[in-house]
Amino acid sequence: MNEKLILHLKKIFGGNRVLTSRTDRMTYSYDASFATQLDPKEPEVVVIPQSTEEVSACVKLANEYKIPLYPRGAGTGQTGGAVPIKGGIVIDLSKMNRIVEIDHQNMQVIVEPGVVQADLNQALKEYNLRFPPDPGSAKMCTVGGMVSNNSSGLRAVKYGVTRTYVLGLEVVLPTGEVIMTGGEKSKALKSVSGYDLAHLMIGSEGTLGIVTKLRLKILPLPVTRGIVLASFKKLEDAGGAVNATFRSGIQPSAIEIMDVNCMKAANMMKPDLNLPDDNEALLIFEVDGSKDEVTAQVHRLTEVVNEYSVFVKFSDEPLECQTLWEARQIVGAAVGLLNPGGFRVYGGEDICVPISRLPEVLRSIQNIAESYGIICGIYGHVGDGNLHTGPVIKLNNKVEVVNVQKMIDDIHNLAIEMEGTTTAEHGVGLVRAEYMEKEHGPALELMRAIKKTMDPNNILNPGKMALPN
Image 1: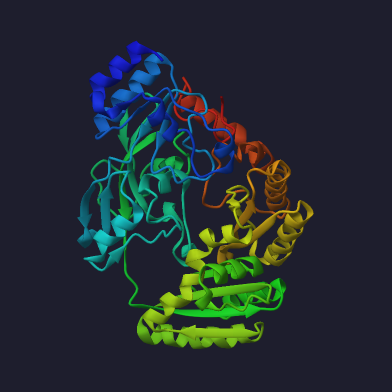
Image 2 (image 1 turned 180 degrees about the vertical axis):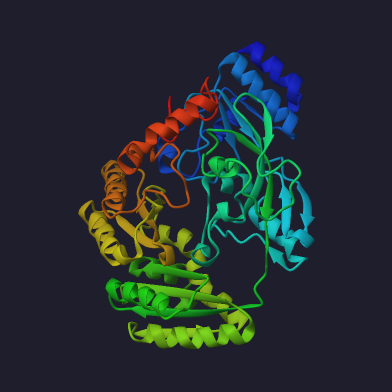
């Protein structure tokens, strides 16, 4: 550990916001990804900024010492994206968590990156407004992390992903310089002035800059929602129902899928759900809008889905809708019950494929899991082709540990072969870097050139996204 560096950091942050103990450093050595559970990487030191000025000073110091700097939010990532694989400094932004301004008249909000998504929406509720991106980790994940990975979630099929709502960003560049994208003083809801630098930063996973403030577009809360839950004998029938829904002119706010293993897991966790787990797939459709509009859409959707399903249940009553949603909300945790004493592996968990190929891909994932003897649930945002896999293994079973990694590799390659992507909302980070060249071809070299131009000393989050090490 460089004592001179530590001394400089303490001058910037004070002694209580510079963490050097082994226990503290271990806390920052992993995230939710299976890869970092198997091989955690400790930083040399952790710092906790409270202002843009402190972040800028830290970046300048990292450049001076040529030491890696790893931005981190809540640590809920599933790709090793914020893990310090080369030691260095972790800069924990979770305490920069102020909601700076709710400008409800101009339909926007200014926040710091450490604001938790659910806390932001709780504050906006007073104004009957919301920040629409809705990841499953909304009660834990930070808005800064959502921008870094361009997160989405359940309702992206109608409302889009995080980038749709970013109007401007305050960013500390790899040199320590601070810029504001989207106009330094702008309160406009759209602009085509200059290069779209905000969108260069969105999804860059902390490799091109550190976001210290965000100006975000917000929308009115829907008046009400309705739910249609349908069970299908075959995966192919579920795929047909999704395509028929879009052809009918209905625009659901969400379409979620659960396979038979997920239905069994949800029933195990909450038996009163009583899901029909003798079929291959369950779809949960949500529509939103005015009361009359939702009632009409629910009835129309039921008619469309009935042609493909063996069981349909629907409601436009808020409390009953919440009950119908519960199965999907618990499934991420419930899949662990499929293998008692097992460990839910996060890997190969975020592929996205064309909607037309969903039945084929779902069947292929099942076959891959069976070929390796791995118990696995499959669920996800079927409305935009985004699938999450939940393999469950025993960590003390070396064969399963090896086989699940082979399974993850097969799933990633399957996604590319099916004209899809290895990640739709969780990011590339460390665990999907090896697929970048296969997925992007020569475009990857341009990404590397941009990184080298903006970060010549390779300070920010090195070793990620198949960028220079």
